[in-house]
Image (tube, rainbow, N blue to C red; front, top):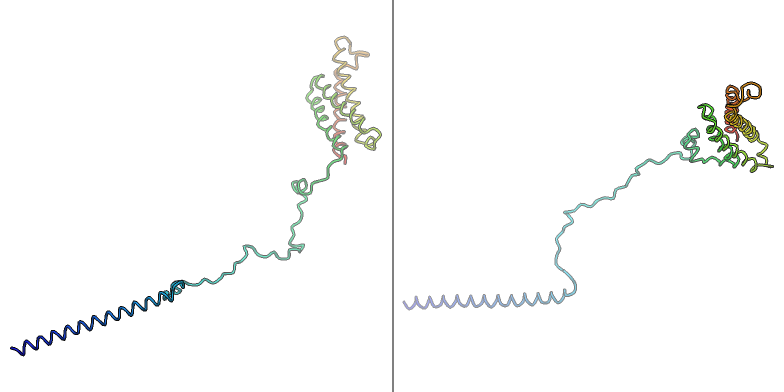
Length: 226
């Protein structure tokens, strides 16, 4: 019985010694680890992260630079006559806008402005307008011609065929306008025999036909003047 008690006591003491030794060794390791950690913190202070980073390059594939191609092909033989399109000279839009034809001279502008007036007189004759309307159109035309006579007096333009044609027409138009005005005024008092024959309606219509032909000729001359 004594031996048994002694044996148990011996076993108990050996176990306590093992626990004590283990506790002392663990405490020593903890102090060493704390000391090493402190040294690492001192050495790496201000140096950023010094640990090991994971390798992420495997997750990405590098892209190779690609060579871009032009959206159009290079023009070949740019200076070659075969590659240049001809100028569209028959296109009025190109001639009037791109080429911009030379401006007309003042004289051509002046006589071209007479065209609408002459066309108005033609309309009066063809539509058989009354005397007042016809004479008003002729009066306006004659006043314009008088202005041109003063403007180009003594100048080369006064010798142009178109200018002489305009003057002759103005004189003829005025004589017909006067004849119609007199016929309108005196025909109630005159017989159509003798001097009254001049105011006969047939005579007046014949004079209007002559005037119409002369106006048409003058319009052609004006349009052909360069």
